[in-house]
Image (tube, rainbow, N blue to C red; front, side):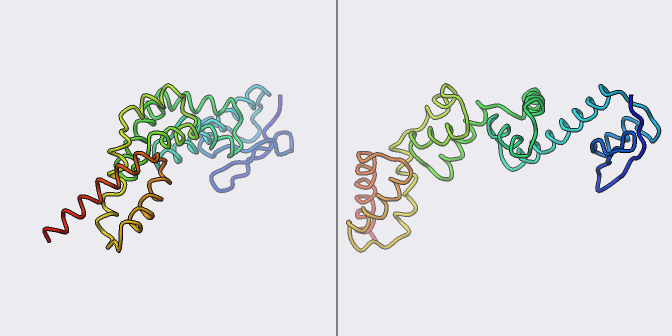
Length: 210
């Protein structure tokens, strides 16, 4: 049993002194909610529980802020919490809570990621797979999410606007610049060749009628 000898408030946090020594820090909200006060006696179990609650609340706040930017995978949330110094128990608790609330779901994340890429920055199925693997998404979920990607269509969409917004001096320039662009987005040789052939022919046809 230890006695709270001082409560030192500082920027939304409260330093708790037990028997004259700084023991740990808690959020002011938790201190108020638990009704902690000077001269109160608490057991070591109660102290450990308070620290655990505080870690969970801070971890949840950290994860929620991270999720507010865009959807995340389970692995991304765990990595962020780990980098911020939260232990594995806190990570598990936070992730479990977010899943229960429907705020964390790797199936939904993988679908979001794939659709977002297809809409704003098309890339090959192979590169989409690699990106999701780096996000820590399971293989089965990845394959399901990228199953709708058609490389021919994605390659065409990736360079459609670029091809028409640039004045090409010759076909070699066209092939070199757009081919490199498609290569960086993971498309293979045959897809690149067929895509550029199709677009080049479309441009030539359009120019004839101008």
